[in-house]
Length: 451
Image (tube, one colour):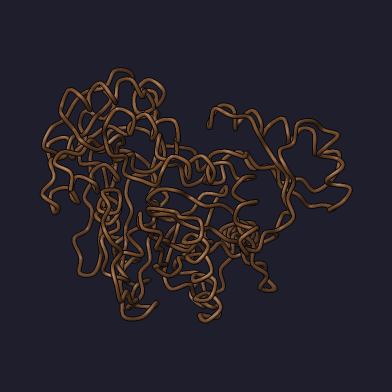
């Protein structure tokens, strides 16, 4: 096991890894930009070192700064968290080449699964269903040829990165050129690669992912599924397990298939196989995330496992847990600092920031009262996770927690989250990726009707 771990990240995940280190009796080292100087985990970690620059490129994406600090403090491992350099194969290889342990899968899996076109091909050859898609698109002629074969609607996707960033939906030929241009521009800026491809667009699918854990001896198991369909702008807002309103036997079979493929590949750490389910029940591979997920706490609550500790242990050659079961229901909401009307980020000083302390409710946050929410990073303030013996009980506890969470100084999306959790269709388990759009459209129609 490691003696000292450097955390190359910020916010809630940095604080979460600090906690895991304490429980494993590993010294933790955090880094922080000037914008994050008030973060609570700076005092909670064993050591803390400042970074120069506030933008991501100047701070948490600066490999040279990170590696200098790692050697200076005597760290023997680096945990990249999620986002930033968590799926950067070159960074992972550099960490290994400089004699440290990278907490994550081998660089080859970051490389192969980080490219969605490559990942689709790999998974398809081993039996994972995929929806029709193209190879990398190099010009408009290739795109038009694919569209001619497959028809519309299509979606243009960046080949690198994840989280839905840069996706452009195309309903007719005249929109294709502009969509390609926009997707390439966003991909180049966000992921340092402008590669894009086309895929069949699924209207109102279910977004369901399967948590995989694997060791360095070729073994892999699944930790069941997470339902992630409640999204806005292709970004997840609410996640839960088990997935409601869908055949549990079919989900279990897909989870076992996903784990089996990862075992055949020789995958060797945490990973998440993401899929889409059409309204008719057809399933297709979306992508594989080769890192800890933002929503990992949902799986932790229903399995009793600590995925961050497992991730560290597996990177050091540890074994998989045995006899894993799932008990109860867990649901998570992401609380963002954003204007509820425009959904644009909201910045300012947290004059009041008081997370609730309630039974069966867990709050993960990298903020504290008095801290500044800057414009430099993702505006997520906290993740609130509630557990219950039933889905209704878990939802009820999450609702109470959201209403009790006191935040002043920035605006938040709390009202939107509450609206979703109280929506009759959501409560019936009738969820898909368009549910927020339907809720907001109904709200707008009600407003106009009242005038």
